[in-house]
Amino acid sequence: MTTYTSRVIREGLSFGEAPRWHDGRLWFSDFYRHGVFSVEADGSDERLEHVVDTQPSGLGWLPNGDLVCVSSTDHRVLRFRGNAREEFADISEYCGFWANDMVVSSTGYSYVGNFGFDLDTMLAEEGAKGLFASPPPTTNVVVLNQDGKVIQHVADMAFPNGSVITPDGATLIVGETMAFRLSAFDVHSDGTLSNRRVWAQLDFVATDGMCLDAEGQIWLANALTNKCLRVKEGGEITGEVTTSQTAFACMLGGENGTTLFIMTSPSSNRFEIADKTLGKLESVIVTQTHAGLP
Image (cartoon, rainbow, N blue to C red; front, side):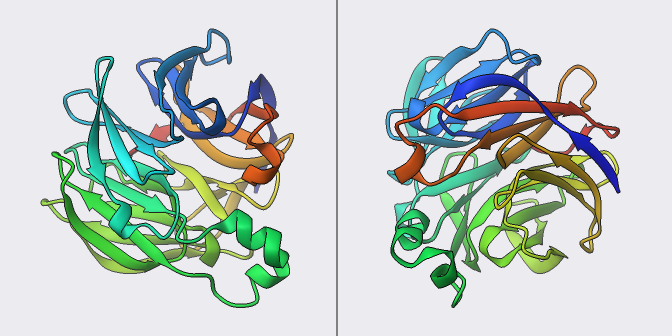
């Protein structure tokens, strides 16, 4: 296994989420600064791209270049046409709690997850021991077409979180945070999903934001530790990055596609961090370049 240590390139975030390399810059959502931001590869020149009052999360781009962004607390997906903002989809019917991360295919289909239950309140009332005493409620992955219409929902997902699409567009892989696994689906030409299967079952790894590399392996944040892991299909861990605090999402980008950007924070618990700016952006150079989506 290859090991790395990241370096902090930007401080002062509240809770960074959904890092994406786009148009030569790193884009990301910041929950409690209520905006979509972009920065240069070295963490400098931060720009507020869009305000999302409710709470931004997953990001993606439609084939025409419009940005779509998950509006977490009101269970919507927003679409930005230049500076104009409109509702792209309302997925509240399919959400157990906050809407969360997503990935958008090259043909414009969106795959959106959600928490399924109020994790922070459950932790406050029962603690981690209570949380893992029995399986928490499951929820749906919601599939949207190019116009934002719900065309499918996949049930019984255990906190569907970070997700990737392979370069050929044929496979969607979704992290199920509460099941410590990555699940794969076949993607059909109409955007719908079938043939659910386990891509990797991991040992106490709370799979969070992730990306694919050119060898078909997945870099993912383990939301229980200050680690990002590189995982092969089947579950072998082939790489590890140690971060300064807990890792919650990662993305390959930079000029050569080999810079792994990592969003970190002391916690994801809103009762502990919503009024603070302790989040960080960290990075490290790895061997394999970015592949697939996001």
